[in-house]
Image (cartoon, rainbow over all chains, first blue to last red; front, side, top):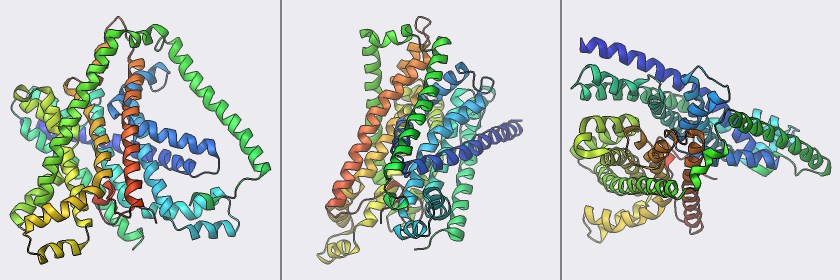
Length: 215
Length: 283
């Protein structure tokens, strides 16, 4: 009875957590890379915009960010129906700041000669960044990027406090129907998160061996 | 790296950039204006919703909330440093029965979401611990495990010769750790520790979920009162408070790191501790 209920609810929660994670990861990576490109661009106002984005979003607690998007977005007539997409918005905006910092540090590790060579054969700034610098930068930052994604995995749990029925939500939900099951609930939910984290670090290790820069 | 990716702009490029900047600024201003105008017309940020932040009662309540948040963060950090030091020395120990449990504890608490941990502690032991210590305990377990890895990286970054010299003059293992390695490691770990303080302070906001007193909770009690009903205004004020504090702490960490580098000392990064070699370093 308890076991079947536990597995079915955990499966539901697991799916929701994975969806939150997948969408936020995608949006945060694209946005974060764009911000990193802005931070190294030749145009001063774009650089300033990138810097202020990172400073604002990296220093705001995720809970407060959730508070603003969950209440604020519907008032702008955006994402009115869906708590899920509002949660994804908060998570991606927050994580993009960290992705930006990681990608920028990766850009700094690419040797200066690479950019010099690209410039000497006549590539423009955008071409230099896209074809020469960024591909090498990403290969340099696989481990820290994986840590950002692992942090994102754990951060998806904050959505449970804002009406999303993810894994963490199941903890308090299961206790209402099965008092005294707290320890098992905690251990099994924790195991689900550890599984996701293990898959991400495993994938990162694999990528690092395949395409990472050996030193 | 930055300067070699493009030429120093000449007069024509500067003119183009100026025009682009003006247009870009107008676009950003238009978006911001639209957001503010919509929020205004939906009666989300009307002047009367900002008024409470001028009232002495509200200001002092927010201030008390901030103090409660800072107190929880401070207690948690101090406990986490102690817990982290114990875990790190366990992990660095030569005895397998000390090393393996330490590794298991560190990896478990680093992989579990903090909110799940805090909810679990509160639901299980909240009646005896209360909200404050449920929050502090959760923060301690998580940040202690992260700090343990930072400490380990710091200790391992001290040159080998130091340890060998310590043994050569007849010090015991514990003496080498206490008198030789730890003092030198602390300096290189300081920026990483301060960065972790920023993380802990932000995470203290999670106490909101279990109802621990803190600035976010004070904010909630302001905006749910029908008299004000101003969640967005409260959200912006809370964000501003956290940004100011965390930004100053981050600047402090950067400043200390720059000073360490100037003096030729090594600096440990949080990222170093995950896997493999340092990725974010400067060549």
